[in-house]
Image 1: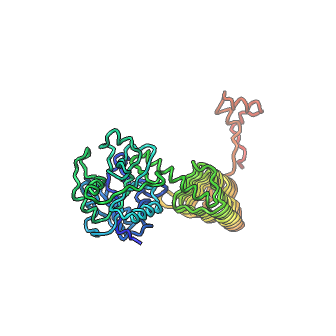
Image 2: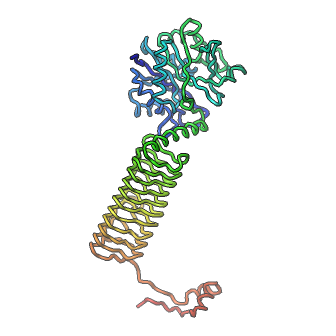
Length: 482
């Protein structure tokens, strides 16, 4: 079997139409930069060497690739004089003979099977050069594939250099090429910049090869959507939607129920078991893994979350956390990094949890904040409880034991421990440890200042209602004092 000797990814462009400080090839689709999608597709071809041409914002691109594709060789195109010049730079020091694949770093929808098929057809034909083409509904902006009367490739003409008839052609150049390296080197030497952009076009080598009696052909892709590039935010969104549909379709065919695929966004790295149900408006990203029987959504965001079997997360946001089997989250919960919910635990409506572990069967049902805490099993945290973990300088930890009952509106001033089986009275401000089996009470005795409203809010609707109910001015009498 013929071997792919070299792959060159062109990633040096400015990407000005993105209108972004971030290099174009680093804009993400499905959780990965576009150039990563391209390099992943190439990897299946097992090229002897992969080179990436960098230029604009090279430091950002290089730093990223060194961490994600360290085996790729980075080649600097200092002056960006077109794709032909970029390939000239990339071929310096490359093998003298063999086959080279050249493609752009902003074509994230290309798949390994398509590239493999392209390579196999090129190899089977025994030609010196091939371009992957596609028929598209709207060819505007793309180079056109010009064929002769016999239907063979005659030339590739860029949009800005095309005449009116050529602009009617709907078969376009995808920017994916295979060349015999020796033939390519020879053709590159004859390139000139006599075009409207004043650049050296790689596409011009096809006409030069044909003129020299060498063979070149256009191999048409079966799925034009794979060949789409992203030059601006609108095209990026189009590509993202296609990738979304691909990913969702794969999950649904694997046994996942996605109620509304058009509003469900799942990154490539996400793992979802069969019999999971995902409701509309949900997004799963990062290293998220969802076990069988879980329910996600509607309107739920999970970022790098491990979700146990049968867990339910409804209208909530969860990041860098673990949700145990049969656990319940939401609606309207905010689970921040470092949180672990054990099996059967519950975090309910309008609860925020950060860097805490909540034990098996324990509940934080509503309107509470839990930060830097360890909560045992079978414990209930009453409504509006606050774990006061920050003293203005440092964070402190709270430890709650097993089978504890924290009364509503309790303030737990960390560092503090509430022992197994203990209670706190509603409205308490707990500043000291509560021993196991004890009731922590920390609140002042209630005082009623009689007649206060009649004296201080005379003439108000409250005063009128109070007088009708039989209230008097009270003469400063206070109930509840000894």
